[in-house]
Length: 410
Image (tube, rainbow, N blue to C red; front, side, top):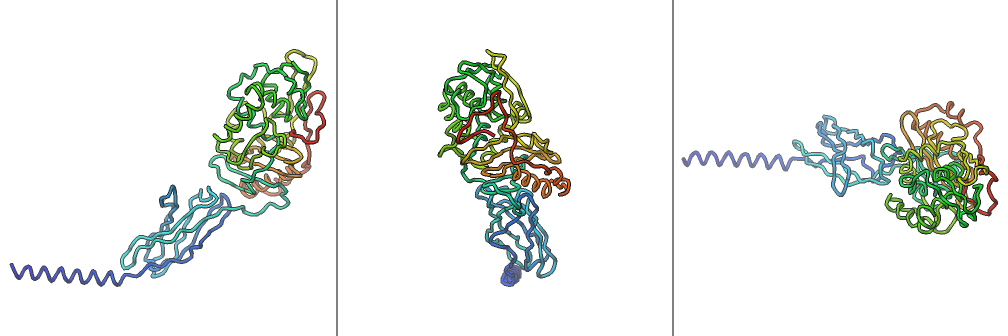
């Protein structure tokens, strides 16, 4: 018995000794090629090649930080030698946030210790700047997953003019009776740059005012809708701001229902992308923003005809892929637009703020989208841009628009 115990003790001691030697002989894992910050183009594939030693065919794991936890995002196999490379392919949504934290880890293998790297950051950006683009802020966003395609000052708080009317439409199109009459008040009659052919006491169907507001950017129609839905424009504006907050529009504040210049009236390109996507879920909105022209009269006077024409150059000229949107222009805001397009089965939101040459800028943005991301030939896209206009008829409502130093139409 004693002899057996002695033998067992010797075996255990030998095993411990061997294990100790192996542990002491293990090499620290070295990994190189990881930058502190990695940049890439929005929605384009991103890869990172690293060198690991010892390699020995081991797995190299890319992890992304989500809600404070490290989650495996991709793996790659290193070469079989003592030192080898591994090519890590980032997931397709790597650029969904403006900055994302990552790290690389490698599990323990024979004679090589486990590796846990320091975190590094990815920062998505534009594939390239768009030559000649003048707008203060611009955005292209893929609707299916919210992936940015192009961004310029997308969170800057800027005057947004008549793109405001999208919120006025959103708050009422889901709730109001489209045939319900709305009466013109003295305030509606005196609205800045109103373009309805109207008199105090006139009654219009709600749907006619929606169309005048979204097709021809009628300011007085917006005020009439706001008074009808909120009791007063001021009360309705409170609802607009509450809705903006509920939608997550962090850089938006309204002072009126139609986009008149005011110090505390602003939005951002990103917030307008949120608003437009919400609006486009409403089939009535979708239909109205694709109407080039509309005619209607007051319920109490069938002789005074209102004729409203689109302020949207893309719609007027049948620009390929156009699904409609909302224009805006004031002295302070300059040219603005928020719209949706579709190419090769994918929908995108395109937003522009603060442009002196709105439609030239819009064509530049759409050319970038179509050639760099939708796979269209530059020659075909250029043909669609021929004859691009700086202005489009702002529409008329019978007598045309009254003059004003600042406008929230077009």
